[in-house]
Structure formats: structure tokens, C-alpha cells
Length: 178
Image (cartoon, rainbow, N blue to C red; front, side, top):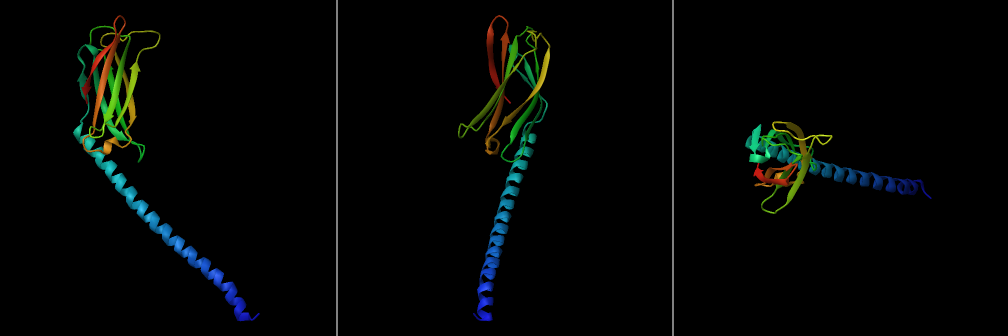
């Protein structure tokens, strides 16, 4: 075998591999560039949604539920990372009913009216050892409700609900929009 043919047989696979790697590098670089643009657009949309939300719902707010009590929304914000966005609400329940309660059930709902998509969570507030929520007692806590993209829709709404559970009567209540 001639030396020239040997060099050709060795160089062709090496050149082919180098060309293949260069093509793969170009493809990966293009893919990463497109992913970066998409990620930056999603980050910008989330930042816009957060800013719009903060401007639309100044805090604190007091929601009066009549004989059920009052929920004071201390802080409400969109938090999380892309794909894991949450509506975080820090609130205080105040027993303004004038009557003792066994417990209070506070709910948080995020809804897209156009599609009917909804995320909801509720929390039962009670003191340990069967103590009652006496008149003027308070209970502070928070919700972290995953939005699953509902916050990105144009007319999404959220609401807080409250049910008071009295020792003698059981649950009763109604909902008020946030």
C-alpha cells in the first residue's frame, strides 16, 4: 500500500469526525441560543405579571366577612421560579364576630374565568388543646398556592373565602373577592 493511500485512509475518518463535531457544536449553539431567548421572554413575562399584580392589589387589605370574622391580607405576591410560580398570601384572621369559634377555615382560589381553570387551597385555623378562637383573637399564617400558569392569563382572578365553625352550630360562611 502506498504511503499516500495510507494517509488518505487515516485522514478521511479524522476529517469526517471533525466535520461532524463542528456541525454538532453549531447545532448545540443554535439550540442554546434559542433556549436563552425563550427563557428570557418567559422571565420577562413573569416579571411583568408580578409588577402588574403588585400595582393592582396594594396591601394590606382587610376583608370583612361579617359574623364570620375578618381576614387581613398583609402581603400578597407572585413568587417562585419559571414553571413553579405561586401566589403567596400572608394573612391574619381576626375573630371580629363577638362569639367563640372552634375553628376558622380560610380558602384561597385562583381562577381563569375564560377557561374555568382553577387552583384552590384551604387551611383550617385552630388553637391546640381544644382552645377556642375567642372574640378578638388572631391567627397569622400564609398560603403558597401554585398557579400552574393561571397568573399569565389576561383576566385571572383570585379570591379569599372564610367559614367560621362555631362550637354549637358547625360550618357557615360565604366568600368575598380579593
